Length: 330
Ligand code: AHG
Ligand code: MN
Ligand code: MN
Ligand code: MN
Image (cartoon, rainbow, N blue to C red; front, side, top):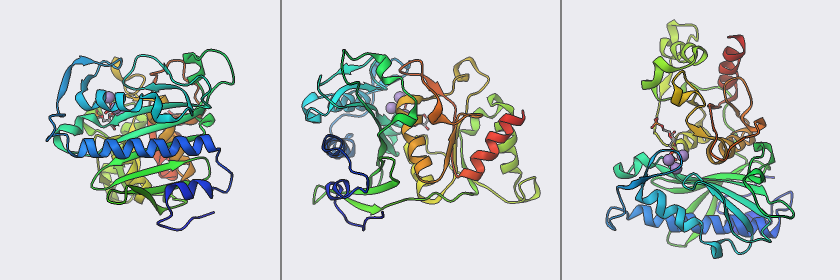
């Protein structure tokens, strides 16, 4: 059921049609509070000498920004989760970090998505995914390697002109705004639905020569415009922050693509299954869109490794299904 704008986040969680457990309720409120804290840190980072990169790489082989590490350290503070989290996995850590043995949930996140935008004051975000923790026994990586269909919650916080949280528990998608003066998250939109068609695509065009043929075909048709096979003109956007591009799609439709490609470095895709593709695919599907790796549904994949990568094509359902058909026809 659709809740009214300006409903505070806590009240929204309490009124969920299918009850949300008190522990998950507490976990989401803690995530919101942590991201509000990070929003303030990012918003004053140049003034506090928190910009720039460190002389170290993460498990992805990426040079870490100061804020990649600082945000990760903020999120892994155990007391922050009030006993609700059994373990954490993050883009910025090689392996899992146990938190509370009695925690009901596993928390997986990308603490700063779009890090390359930090030094140029571009859009960045935090992406999070929540799974049920195993009932007993010591935590292992295997407990995190579950298909995206098993997520109990997924979402992102976008640090843009506004700080917004977009979240789903499998009961539709809600958008909350962080009211900095009141230190409160208030409902902006509930039961978001993405338009099934679009004239707007998001892809890093500089990789064109490396793409699989189905992606080259789809994009070339978009670029050919109304005189081409699609019979209509398209627009392009690319923010270099998945959260920023996805929020545009949540807001007005579109298709976002980071496909696998023919390079050794691109054959599994760039984006990571557990803390980018899965939570975003959960949101997109809950908002009536589609999310595939090319030929298959993203949420049905069972990852074999914590930092496994995947192709990502998601957004307006009819456009994603067209690309998927080009893969299966190929
Ligand atoms: P992250 O900053 O967490 O490593 O993620 C960056 C990702 C994603 O946010 C974005 O869509 C993509 O990388 C941009 O890739 P390019 O820089 O190759 O365009
Ligand atoms: Mn990164
Ligand atoms: Mn990311
Ligand atoms: Mn990141």
